[in-house]
Length: 298
Image (cartoon, rainbow, N blue to C red; front, top):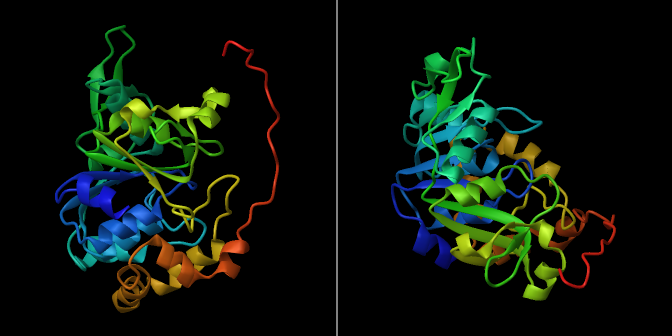
């Protein structure tokens, strides 16, 4: 991970760490903090704890997003301090609806000049974001909102497994992992397991991100903790609750960063500090999917 961040993240970049509730690559965010990257624009449909931590560390100048909050808990206090008080530095916001962000990623992935959507009709979002525009439909059915394409400089995307060539398989709550991979200029895949190509070939329909668009593969077990990875570990709900209290002041937030990010050299040390008992408590159990016959010529 340290090599991937050093090689692919430059000061001033537009960085996406995606994952909709699941597959959120905290390991990438923490390494970006450790390397003290600066002036980043952070992109994410649902900024939650990882972007709160990155903003608290001062790596971000701007955030492009839709929903914002600590899911199931409440506010993101570090982001609130940055926006309202400029602590540790001012943070610019560029806000969309969920579908607005989906549309931007789709336009970026498809190399389109814009993406049309009807859901902004009558919305107050237009007053907050001048990039949301209206154009006349060429088919005579009135005005329609459009948003510009989004093409991050680099995306860190977590998944269950990939082979060494970057052919990546996901299952569960997929979010926009596939679309972000096609939209981003550089793609770093972070996985629980690196498997042989034969494993990928046995179940080709799960391969959502092809290796031909992947720039690096990082093997990082529990790299998405405290979010979850379907079939590998559950969401660490206690972590989200604890962060809601820990992040209420700048001092306690900084103390957490010193202990859990700056104070550990990598993810392995973070997991060791977290403890095997806590990791074992996140065991998701088993519910296996059925087999299918692809035929001998698949």
